[in-house]
Amino acid sequence: MTGRCPRCGLPERCSPRACPARAQAFATAWSPMAYAGAVPPLVIALKDGGALRLARLMAAQMAATAPPGTWRGTLVPVPADPLRRRLRGVDHAARLAGELGPRAGLPVARVLARERAPAHARLTRSRRLRADVGVRTRAGPVPDIAILVDDVHTTGATLHACAAALREAGAEHVAAVTYARTLT
Image 1 (spheres, helix red, strand yellow):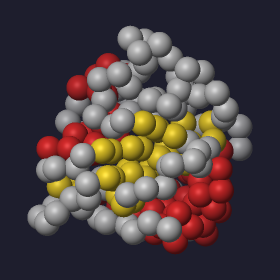
Image 2: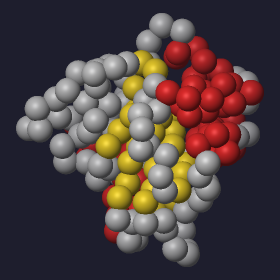
Image 3: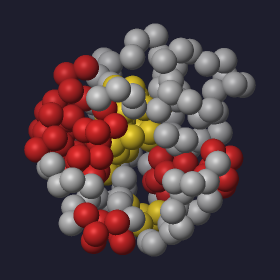
């Protein structure tokens, strides 16, 4: 995906007023892949199929194709919903951040926690953006510069909640990096 909007990560530059991320707490968003074609089955295999080796492949693609200046700060995985983490047996974003850290030359800090919140999959975009995703910071310091790491950027609601929690706890700059970006 080239020629993308640096703010929301969509494949075309948005005008500031029309950008879907205009009111979100993260400063920039980037993903190497569009969530289309062969990508959704890869993401599902990582999240639900236990194909943990895919995190290594995804992290390698992310590290190798990131725009200049992306890798500064500390990687912060988006915390998984506790029930889904128990059912899956893994926190896929933490696994992805763990694989990405050495490739990007950055530390990983698990400074966010998530409480059980209602599922967002069936909500409209506007309702997702207003819904509580149950994210909070853990005790201890947060990084000044944080890069949120997750598998897919859809509406940005979870990324926004995570970025808002980090900003409220003192982070000066929060960016979002995901493996894939939905195109709507």
